[in-house]
Image (cartoon, rainbow, N blue to C red; front, side, top):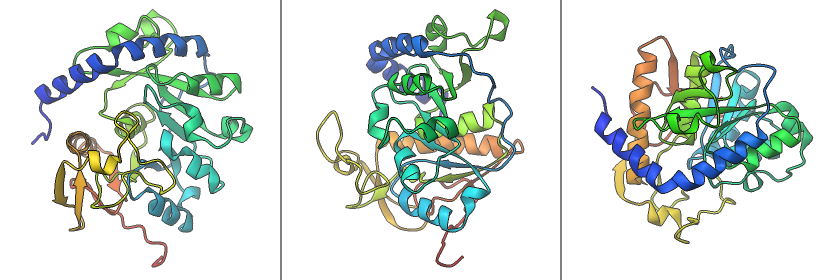
Length: 299
């Protein structure tokens, strides 16, 4: 049984478009100025297992366990934008970083914007509507970067293809057309499976919730204040209290609950078609996929 209806998805897409369309159009124009044709496509590049890191409350512990267990030698890593600087601080450059946020600047996610090792080792994946400071940084420093366009329920890809071509019959592919996801972490899952064809994927930092009285994001030194309302996100997003998949009382928001249900639908579909997606977060809302328990202290 599907956990998300078509009507819910279309309603969410329409609401998002109405809020962001002016910023999206400006970003798409700027990103096109930064565009460079890349020597290699990312299609079908997934040979090793893939670890996807989101920035939920469990991120810091998940990352420490992942490194202590030497899993960074066995997995390709894709992390969302907010995770990036925490990997680098530990001496690890993820193979991929993905950004989707229209407003989040690159400078907020990195300690040193002139880190040449980053541009050499880490490939940027970004939406054509994302903040263009990311594409400018990779373009100016000759890094590898790739765009995608979301195909959503209200067909906004038909609007933004005036800037980026996604149809091979019309010329070079400038952006991959992917199924629209509900947030940046879920986009990593879609891109990793649909474009890069990683068949084995583990999820880390995918809490979609936070402990009562705890941090919203995955690291204590990250601002927990909402940029629009100026209040702690753990207060603003405490809409629903529930027992998580480990039997612990946690809080979540309406949007996170929606995104979690959306992701569980996708996981069910992928696992039914030969993929193996497992949740290694160790907490949170995801119920429909096998669990991996990472605990470096127990080995």
